[in-house]
Length: 555
Image: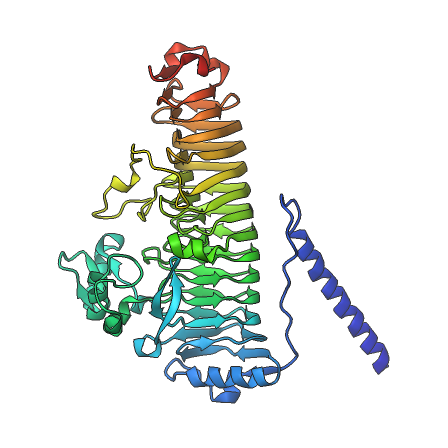
């Protein structure tokens, strides 16, 4: 009888394994490029609980040493699963080691300490630059086979780290924030959590390290040096499956130079006003799956990066072989984003079956001169969007760090294309071969903006079988080889399309639908080979062609 049960158990295990294998195969269906299957994690049968190492629930006792001892004990056994039971577990930083699965049972709530003394300054990479920040609440470096799983919640206590702008919260919230302590900026429009943060902000000319003071003085401004919540550097076989990650000091999840990464069944949350409150920033990683997740964050939601400027080019590690499927994004500066730190390049990325609800920009591509890097072979399809307050699809190759939705006191200068012609060098970014299919958006502001560079046009951008119901329609600047095939643009304001210094533009199968008569503007001495719908190309009242443009190049 025991032998029979053992056989049945083995068969059941094989069936479960087969189901999992089939699911993994399904994620690779209809992918436009070849990539290896992502290698999943697998752990020894060893299991321990945080309570076995002095862990105390309740949220009043720091469990930093208990987590450290439990991980060390499991490591000596060859790895295994560290259980965090139901309850509130206060702790300082947790460092994961190879073959460790940090598993949060349902009802488990890890909350990280607000005491900045628990987070020493360390060498890191942030926003694509080699820099110094506080140690991350959760980190792993050069680890192999690691996971964070379960149905619990991980909270980074980001409210103790972040500044808040007055224009981003209600008056009642602002009064509550001020009464909690901290300090105001000289103009009274920004609240800082401490004098240390304020000093760091005033000593910095960038988002990264205060460069107006010496390295030795950094400890006096460490409150300003906010860490990402989950920092995974140079790791192979990484699984995040199940938990809620929320309230991060800066970015939420940051896999950097990792391989064989799977992010699934996650809820990633930050207050909508949280500066640098990104969801996941996938940087210089390869062979990655991101699926069945929900994001509601304060900055970009799902973001592809690969280093910034010279640091990124020297690293020379593109983000590549990435599948992103079946994710929901609520608030965020972008639903799916490439850039702006993409100096190492990005290629072979598939995005499909996602829903963006109220995201500032839907599909967002951003860079600027000085970055360099090549972004190519991006395939995006089956995306549904509603209530997008700016662009549904937006390319901006002269992005300067501004939010797409202007905040109190922000200016628009960074969004104006300079006329000066720059030479093409290693610092010139290249975006090409990017394909969109079945993109649908309603109740949104602007359908498509394609802003390239005069010296390096956007190249070979194809949008097909898509519908946009927006206030404004289409703008194309400094682009080469743009095709809109079987696209419907329903809009209520402005022109149907404005085309400037662009060539090989095919809009011949676009359906322009407006409350007013559709109108197309074509400008710029470099513009040529523009194909328009027949009903517009033959109607002089529907078409404005600048004297700089050869009329026979517009058909």
